[in-house]
Image 1 (cartoon, rainbow, N blue to C red):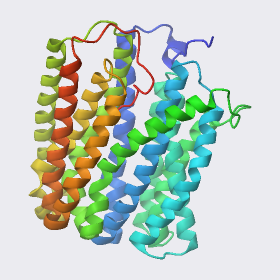
Image 2 (image 1 turned 45 degrees about the horizontal axis):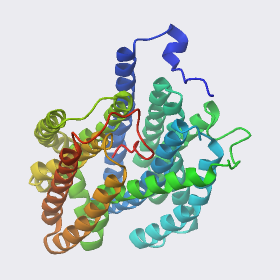
Image 3 (image 1 turned 45 degrees about the vertical axis):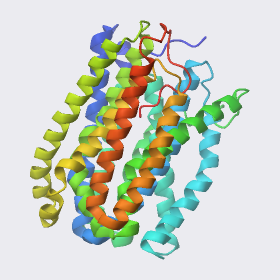
Length: 433
């Protein structure tokens, strides 16, 4: 039996009350993600936009969307699966490292294909660097599981600060075109990802040791869980990045930039639900009572209030931020602020509600809802974007994300009062979206 993981705070300062420790963990998680996203949105991305212009910047955003889809599906899927394996006593590093190693083959292939389709032929050095960027991003999305497993949110915070430091340094590479226009922006992002992955490799255990590439007897079960969570996260990632991909296909890089800027604040605000979901998972895992319609109704009401408040705040912040950082496209982007931000907030709030619902329903409902969502998403968004461009993307995303929220809420209400008290989550119920 493994010893209970002890956080760095407990090791250094003695036992910490659970409520205080939970609050400190949440604060450190949020601060780390705020630091990283702050550098990305305030320094790195504006530097790329200023150096290359709106149209080229939109092309790069589309390429980074492909990287994000790969990293979220593979890296985050393996991350969650590793957490599940630990709770089931199957927590070994080798099975997941083997999976990641095999996954690098499709990662490399998709990266080169995206590069050629979006930017055209940029030469072997550029494509090799872009493959390195994609691989490091996958490993970075997986890497923070080291600190989740050890409940060490101080190192989790340091992890994301290191990414931020790398991006700051990379921004100067872009600003002064140190390595040329094509190479500098890739190298800028590689710098942040490499610092984070290197930190885990040096201070953690998931990438090293005798079992680093050793398969366990539970390899098949671990891979099964990983593939299931990969599929779920792939759907989420495609939905989240579809605006950059579809607008690039049907319009151009400048359209990608305009819509990205219009939704920017909403996405950043909504992304802060990720650490919140982690805390919710922790509390729900210990909750052994029943979920009643009244209790779930309160949660739904809170979610709707959060949606309204975050949307209003996102719109106000967008007028300030976009006019400051992207003055050349402020007028065009501002007409989409309200409904574009509402669509983003609905997507993430639905993810938080799904975390709650999965505490008392089978995990297959997550896959069912997300699969139906994917079908409706494609059926609605493709013709809307093809015919109405950015406006079609704005209204389409708001509609399908609101429907996803409604589907999750209905599923929850149907199953409340039917659930029995439980001891903890089942396999797969650690997905944060």
